[in-house]
Image (cartoon, rainbow, N blue to C red):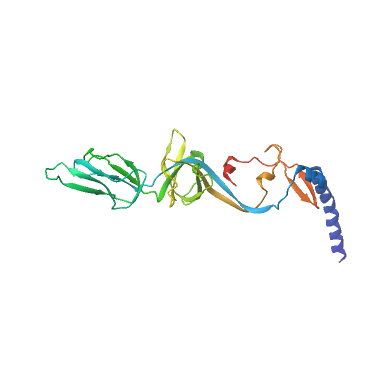
Length: 274
């Protein structure tokens, strides 16, 4: 029993100076503010929370038509466009009549064939008008099925090794800044673009509202890792000129103090976080 008491005394004696040093260090890195100073500075406090932080690869890219989801409308016979029904930028269903072609064969009246939509989608191009001569080689209309789109990101080569199939991603376009589309990585390009130094990363994105259109520029945040339960503070709580002299306020014993701790630089990849 006597040996245990002596051991506890030694531990307490050893911890005392260390705790005092820690308190002195904390005091040296803090500036106390009274209630009047808090009010004058307009300081508001919130509780720090544990959140999940994601490591992302940021890339730029384009929205395109899904492979196999477009169709060309053409005529099997040579003739003249008798009637054009389909209009550009309008939806159509498979089997809808788009135009009719009057044959060059003799007849009274000449034979007329009906040309229907081969797939459902949006009529993206109309290259024919009423009375125009047509031949089997002509592309009269183009239809895109945009129920899902092909999103292609150009990932810098030095980051391509961090990517793998089925990684999740968040996709944004300038036209809808408050909307986020989620998708998973389908595949990487077979070759790299030597001019831009990037590798294609392809995603299939659901597009039920038809908001995403081919040719739109997109921003990709590809999630390659996640840290769970990280203690975090709001970005607005960091004061000063980051990252050189960033500090934050924290409450201790019902008073508010300013920590002089320097925070690490905020990476560009986090600029889309909210």
